[in-house]
Length: 152
Figure 1 (cartoon, rainbow, N blue to C red):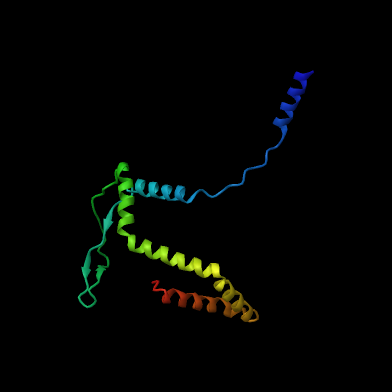
Figure 2 (tube, rainbow, N blue to C red):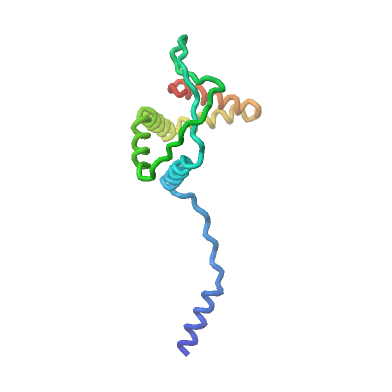
């Protein structure tokens, strides 16, 4: 009788419909590693090419010559050199990364004080009857935030 009970419990467990697991977004590092691996693999089948460049004497900037694109010899990346490429990319873009961290911190401070939320609520109340002005006003305000923080 005891074995019959165990058998019927196991049979009931098999017949129970399990709830479907909800899809979760992968961790940020998983996404970054996937993008890096796809980019590294692309060096094997995407043809390499470049534009001719010249220095503009008036501004001193290096510009691209229109219509000068030509293919060059492909140099696929060795999979063992991917970590070196990541490190080199981080070192070369350190000023940009530092700037992004500072801006992120400043934005977090503004957000945590509630100043930005209060501003958005005030603007939405002010322009609640004028719905066509809401987007241009918000664009103008956030543009002012952008150029006052030296964001290009």
